[in-house]
Length: 318
Length: 247
Ligand SMILES: Nc1ncnc2c1ncn2[C@@H]1O[C@H](COP(=O)(O)OP(=O)(O)O)[C@@H](O)[C@H]1O
Ligand SMILES: [Mg+2]
View 1: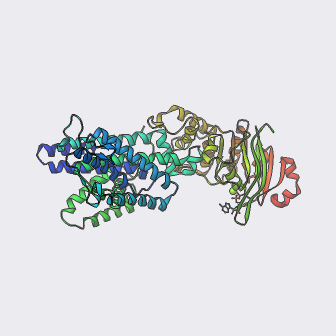
View 2: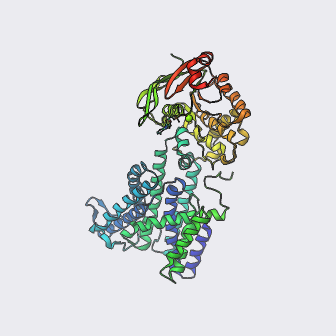
C-alpha cells in the first residue's frame, strides 16, 4: 500500500498532473495525522476528540514562523521568525508535546465519555483562542506566502514536497511499530486491555498513557505543520472539532490499533471525498453509511477485514 | 516479630453504614500459609484490596517487611513484592499467556520506559516469565491466548502472574473457586511447594485444602477477626463452628 502511494504521485508528476501530486501529499499528511491519533485512540484506548488542537497548533507554528520570517519581525517581540523547516518541525513537535502534556495530565484523570468531552473542550479553547488573536489572522487564517525551506531541497516543487511528506508518514509508522513492540508498547497495550492487571503487575497506567498521548500529539502536530505548508495557508478550521472528528473517522474506518489502519482510512476518506464530492455535496452521507457498515460489520476496520479480523494486540509474527 | 513479612495494624473500612473491615490486625510470617476464612460477605476480598492498595483503609496501617506501604499505589506495592490474584480472574484475554506474565517481569526487571528493543525476543523478559509459568505447570500453554484457557488454567495463570513479580508475599483470593476436586488437589500441591519460597495469605472456602495447607488461620465474620490460631485451635473453637463451619 505504501509502495502504491509512492509510485502513483511519481507517475502523475511525470505525466504532468501536479494536482494529483498535491492530492497525494494531502492524503499522506492526513494519514500521518491519523497515525498520531491511532497511537492514543487505537493502541492506547484513549478516545481523544481533540487532536485537531495538535494538528492546528503544528500548522500555526509553520504559519507564524513563515509570517515573521517574511516580515523580519519577532514572535511576541522576542523570537525571530524562521522559514527553516529544520527549526520549525522540532518547534512544532515540542509545542504540541507540551500542550498534550498539559491537556493529557488533566484529561487522563477521567475515563470514558468524560475523557472524550474534556479533550474536546480543551481543543475548543485552542480553537477560540486562535479565532480571536488578530495578529495571526483571527478567523480569516494566516497565509504562508513562501513555502518553508529545507536546506538543499526545493520544497516548492510538488513532487519534492510529496516525498518529504511521504518520508514523514513512513517514519511515523515505523516509530509506531517499534514503540508498540517495545516494553513501553506492551505496557500501553495492557493499559488498554486491563488496567487493573497492569497496576497489579507493578506498572502505573497513568504515566504510560500520558507519554503515549504526548507522542501521539507530536506526530499529529508535525503532520499539521506540513499540512499548512502544503496548503500555503493555516486557519482555525485546522483546529476545529470537525477536524478532530475526521481524524477519528479515518482511524475507525481503517481499523483502530492497526499499523496500516490510518493509511487505509485516509485512502477511503479522501477517495470518497474526491470521487463522490465531485458528484454530490452530500457525499458525507455515503461516508456515514460506510462508517456505519464498518462499525456494525467489520469492527476492526478495513485492515481487520483485509487480514481476517483478528483483534489488535495479537502476537507479532515471529 | 522480625519474621513478619506482612503486618496489618488496626485496619478499618466502612462502605456507608456497612463496616466491611473492623479493626483487623494480623501478620504473615516467612515460610507460612496464613488462611483467612469466613462466610460470603465477611469482608475478605475487601481486606485483600486494602492490602494490595486497590482500596484505602479509613484507619490502620499495612507494613511490608516492616516498611509502611499504606499510602502507596497498587503498582508501587506490587513493585515492592506484593503479588496477588483476584477472586474473579483479571487477565488480558486477547493476549497470549506469556504476555500476561511478561508484563510483571517487566516491572521488576527495570522500568517500562524502554522504547526500542522488541519484547518478543527479550530473553530477560521471556525466561523469567517461562519460569513462572513452569512453576504453575502452564509452560505448554505459553503461546495460547488467554481466551482459550480453561477456568482452572486461568486460576493457575493468575498465580503465575503474581510469581513473575518475585513477590515477598502472595495474596490469593479464593484461587480454588470453581476448580472441582481434581483441580483443587493439583493447585493445593502447587501452593504447598511454593510456601517455603514465598509466604501466602490465602482466602479459601475449600476446608480440606485450608486445613492441609495453612499453618495458621484467621476467621473473619462481619469484618471482624473472631478467632485466630493454628489449625487444631480453630477446628475446636466453638464460636467458629457456630459462625462458620456450621457443625
Ligand atoms: N466497593 C464497595 N462498595 C460498597 N460495599 C462493598 C464494596 N465492596 C464490598 N462491599 C460490601 O462489603 C462486604 C464485604 O464484601 P467482600 O469483601 O467482597 O466479602 P467476601 O470477600 O468476604 O465475600 C459485602 O457486604 C459487600 O457487599
Ligand atoms: Mg470475596
